[in-house]
Every structure is written in C-alpha cells, then in structure tokens.
Length: 159
Image (cartoon, rainbow, N blue to C red):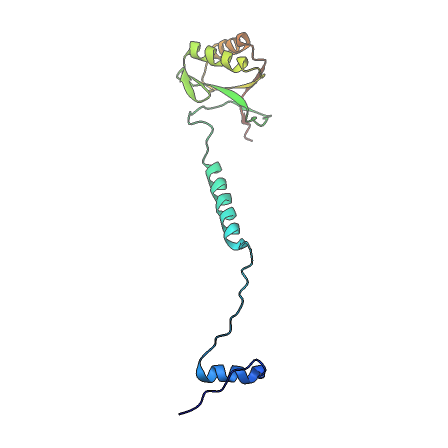
C-alpha cells in the first residue's frame, strides 16, 4: 500500500500543487471577493428600450382625428403645446379641444379656460368651406369670453 505524503506548511508550493493534482484533493480555500459592482449592460439595454418606446409612442400621438381642409397662407407659426383649439367643419360641426360641442358648450369651455387665470392661446381651425360669417361669430364668442390671444390655423402655401 502506498503511503500518502504528509502535508506541511513548509513544503514548497510546487511540490504541494503536484501532490494535490496527483491525489485529487484540494482543501485550500480561495477567498472570493464579492465586489459591489453594478453591471452596466442591462442598464444600458433598459435605457435604450425606454428611448425606443418613447420615440415610437410619440410618433403615434395625433393632434386631432377631425378632417379639416385648412386654407393656405405664406407664413405659418408653430403651435404651442399649451393652447386650445376650436375646429369648424364644413358640415357646421364645432369641436373644442377635440370634443364635439354646440355654441353653448363652446362658450362654457372658453369661459372655463379664462377662469383658470392664464391668458390661453386659442387656435381656430376653420375648414375652407366654412362661411366667413360663422368664423366671425365664433371669434365674437371668443372675444366675449375674455380670450385675447387668437390665431387662425393655415397650411403652408404650396408652390
């Protein structure tokens, strides 16, 4: 029977490693350090996914589903996001901020907008086929409600 070699702390490391390989016993402990490290790859993946989500979802936000054939003009200003819109269709329907209203409902909505204390901008989008008298009547309601900032929406002139 073969006698196993004795282990001592004074034996050279190479000799000990050879004995471990030969007999298959490795009782030395390896101190594994667990470092508090944040793995950046999943974090970057999540940020990119959120970015893609917001880019795609912002493209599908439409201003209005109401078809209005706006008149054309040479100049056109950008529409601020904090504005209210009144849409007049060719068939005589009135929409205030995307909701169908009658004249009394429009008057109530305009007075409510001025009651909030701010001086809101009101954009009137009138179809090309709407009679001028109806646009003037709506502008009179707007003036009566106390809104001073009014804009008429147009499309850029095509050349």
